[in-house]
Image (cartoon, rainbow, N blue to C red; front, side):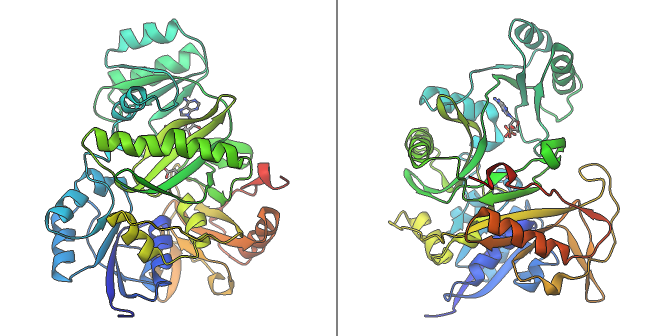
Length: 419
Ligand code: AMP
Ligand code: GLY
């Protein structure tokens, strides 16, 4: 029975590289495919040239190759209905249906669900008329939060500090249709540290993963523009066991149950982007998939066989994952200029000297050497007995990489290093 299972991972970033590397540790797996993968993933899996939203192509591939399990990374594949199509062909897939993925793809769906089932989150109103939205903002206080109602690659949220900023955001979204669609949500500004709570969910069964914190701003001190994530760490010491329990019992479990009641049971990773306010944890957003770059620091701490964990979650069996007590910090090396325009093509040297795990986000292989091919290029991770030790280790690793075109943050996890 050993080494016979075939798995397919859908996606092409650091998150999918972490899923692939984690699956590669399972003694049950004989073959890992990744669609489309990237140059780094190609070292650990066979990459298949199919786009993540090519539902027909991916489903046919899985059928032809008798894939035992497909793990879907990006929301674009979920929203395109990949899980629905695979399930209807009898294929085993870890990732929610299009209906259940609305918890990420429609902010209004998520807010209505939370309101109906009393799940703690910021108060909100939704608008499609610019003047009505503006009147509402004028009658409230600042900061206020304006969110585009749909997928906007992490760029659809504006924390407006004053009326001018709010008006511009509303005009961009409702008058100029910057992201398509024509709906926004205006919500109460919440204060507190944020953390990411990912759970494997199968209907009303919820299996929590270890917590992580993401760093979304480009530069040290949380300055600069928002990005896809510049680094992450796990565990998160500022969330006490009591608050952790509250987040699980008041947010993650009731949300899974609510989705079942609404007729869209969830199977996959339910990601709670939570904020620890004075009144306890509240929801900032839900995602319907593994977080990136949180996955790259959480999965390396998983000691159980992830293939068993995926199967238990899909089938709804009891499973208690074992986690290492290590801390992990991951730092993203990005192209200078990211998230704006940047240059591609520079060679990356020194990767062979690194002992920790390196997840590729945007690289390409030319003449046997890795080169820069994206905005976020690599995520370098290191373990330690605690976060300060992991931090020292990750600094040493990064120093081994030579590539003048890259930059990184030097303060990932800094706020909690001494806790
Ligand atoms: P989202 O895409 O919904 O996760 O929002 C992106 C970022 O905007 C979050 O990580 C928060 O830092 C910030 N944000 C979103 N909603 C709120 C809120 N209601 N109060 C304060 N900050 C928020
Ligand atoms: N790290 C945030 C996300 O994956 O959306």
